[in-house]
Image (tube, rainbow, N blue to C red; front, side, top):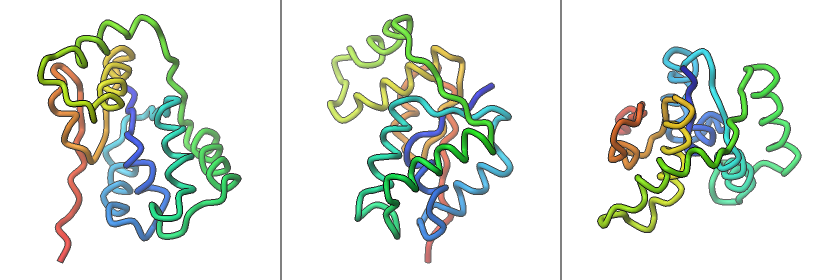
Length: 145
């Protein structure tokens, strides 16, 4: 099985001062599947947010963000999942429900991509639990305080 980490997992892994870094690192070192993947959405989300001045404890320069993605690809063997028109059925099924909330478009896309490729979605975001039949690992951070 391949894991598809959400952007929030990649950001927590990238920043040792991130509140969720210890939990993300524990996942990476002990709970991850042998294969881990980016997709264009998670990669672009990481590039955009890791260079934002208010997201990480120290925003990355664009070149640093690209270097980190390159290190994941080369040193950790992270793959890139392909988009496919074939996944549109899952995407539509997740997003055409009458109770579908507008803020879930990207989550629905990622859930559909993960399901289409037989991946496990990994995120700190509990919203992924609402997508039926999705293999989902919710990372719950340690209590603070």
